[in-house]
Structures are given as C-alpha cells and as structure tokens.
View 1 (tube, helix red, strand yellow):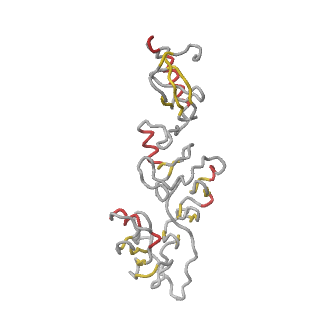
View 2: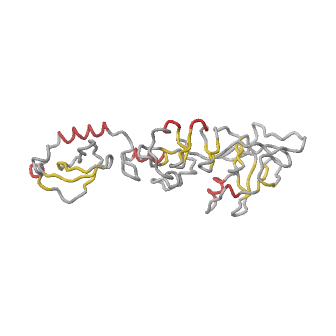
Length: 278
C-alpha cells in the first residue's frame, strides 16, 4: 500500500482583486525534490525558511510540525504572508493541489486526498483506499473484508528501521499477520533470508514450497542412531499450537499445520515414546 504524505483539495479563498494571477512557466525552477510548489514556509520552531518539512528535517536536529506553520513566502514575488491558498500580492496559486488543514501545496498530481480518520493527507486516490477505524489507517479496498485488524497498527515505528510509519512517504507492506513494515525493509528482510514478521514471528509469505523442500531434506538426512528416537516439545509460530515431534537437525515440523517456523519450548531432547510418534 502506498502509505505516503499529503493533500486534500479545498476551495481557494476568493480574491477581491481583478488582477490576473501570475503563473510559473514550465521552465521555472521552483519547489524542491519533494514537492513542486510556489511557496516556502517559515518554521515555527526555529524561524527559518524551507520549502517543505522534509527539507527542514534533513538539515535540522529537530522536526517541524507542518500544522503549526502560520506563515508562507511566495517564491514569485517574495511576499511574506499568512498561510492561504493564493498569494495576497501576485495572486498566484501556491499549489494546484492544496490542503490548508495539512498546510500542503503541490503542483504535481499524485491523486492526493485528505483522510479525516488518519488526520493527514495521503496519495493514491480516495477511491482506492478505505479507513479502518480499528487499525486507524487507510488500507487498500481489496482488504476491506479480509484483513487482520491490529489496533492503531500504523501509529508505531517500522520494526526494522525504527522510523515512523503513519506519516512516512515510504510505501508499507501489509503481511497476513497485520503488522506493518516499510516495503523496502520487507524486501531487505527477504534478501537477507529472514521470512518471519519481526513483530510476531509469523511467516511473511506462503512458505509451502520451502516446507516441502525441508520435508525432502529431513527424509534424505537420517539422524544418527543415538538421536533417532529423541523427541522435543515445540511451539509453532504460524498456528500457535504446541506439539511433540521427533528431534531433527534440519528442522522441527509442526504436527498441526506442517510449518517449520517453530521453536523449542522445553528442555533438552528426551528418548521418544514409540507409541506417541510416527
């Protein structure tokens, strides 16, 4: 899911002037790497001028709350003024897409919309997402009747990079367990050979092919005679069932769901009771 930043369309404030607004041409160099906008803002925290909050946070040792911004500077006429949709002097529109609640201005069309439930603006199109009240975040409409709800799931840091998820511009990955992580962090986990959710340890993917491969490895790798009849108690991290299985160095397979995503829950292996194991 694209879980990015900002923007709701709001009605521009009516101008009492009959002058034609100034427009930036296609060759004009304005905005920053994050947003194409015809304004800069005065930071309420350090009284400096930046194009956007990301530019500020990159340079400073603190973060800025964009909703606390009260002053803008027009990049066309350099007029300092209260936050509004159009310049009070040259009447240019600061952004084709404007959200005065989030103080966002952007000339690039990213299918932005403001979500009252999230309290911020997001990109991707309102028709493609719905707000889940329990998860307290916007989710793709495909998940509306089939996702695992985790209360306030986005109001936490990514378990991999420890960066905020709710306001992140990085898309999120939503595994079946419902815990969120950045898509880039998810891909890095897989690349490093980690296939379990960092939060709950449930498998992040359909592991059927891997479990089948491990079955073949177990069958082709007999244990030494002295360990062949040892058993261990395990907990499955996928189905959360406990079972007693034969000890094997390759892996310990859950008797309930067939997963090898398991862990030992008691002490050392002990001789197996032939009547309790296959």
